[in-house]
Image (cartoon, rainbow, N blue to C red; front, side, top):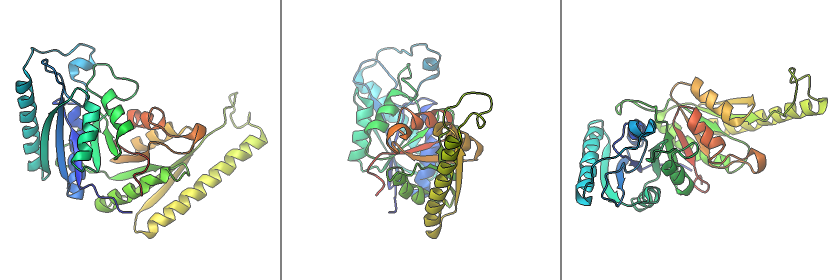
Length: 317
C-alpha cells in the first residue's frame, strides 16, 4: 500500500535543538509536496517556559532556564510571532506551511491531538523534550508522543544541523526480524524510496549466544555453533525473499546480515552510510527479541546519529 504524507506536523519551541528537526521536516515536505503544520505548545502559566521540543543550552548544562513573568497573551503572541518567522523561512525554501500556538500544560497530548485533528500523517520531532532533565534515553515529550501517537514519528538527533533548502535522505535502513509487525514499516519505506529515488538496505541481526573465554567460537559447543549458522542462513534467506519482492516493484534493495545485538548493529550501519534514515517499528518479534521503545528503538535513536522513522503498530496496511 502506498503511503503519502500530505500533511506533516512539526512541534517547535524556539530552541536550537528543536530546530534540528526543521531540515528533515522541510525535506520530506518537499519530496511529498506536503503542507508542513508548525505548532508550539505553551504551558498555561505566567512564566515563560519553552513549549515543546528540546533542551536549551542552559538546560543542557544543568542550569534552570528562567525568565521574568509574562502574561498569557504576551507569551502566546510571542510564540505566534516565532512561528511566523519560521514559516517565512520555510516558505522561502519552497515549503507550504500553517502555524498554530496553543496553550496546554500537557505538550505531548496536545501534539498528538493536534496531529489527529489537522489530518497529519507524520510527526517530526527533535530527540529531546523541553524538561531540563532528560528521562531515560529520550526526552519526556518526544518519548510520550512516540508511545501514544497513532501516526508515524520521525525522531531527529539534536546534533543534526542541515540547511532547510538541502536535506533529503539518501538511503533507507530497515531492520526486520521476520515478524509481520516489523514488516508494517515496508509501505512507508516504499513510499519514501519512490519519491526520493533512493536505495533501501534491509537489515537483520542474528543474536550470538553468551559464551565465556577469549576464543568465542572455540568455547561454543558444536550444537550452539550449528544453531548460529542455521539462524544466519534463515536470516539471509528471509531478507533475500523480501528484497526480491521489493525489487519486483522497482526499488533498489540490498541486504545486510550481522551477528550481534540489533541496537548496536543498526546504529553502526547507519553511521557508516551517508545520509541514512532508519525506518523501524516500535515492536518486532515477541519475547527476548522484541523491539520496543525504551530498548532497541530507543537506543538506535540515541546512538545512530541519523533520523529514525518510528512506525506504530497498525499503520502499515
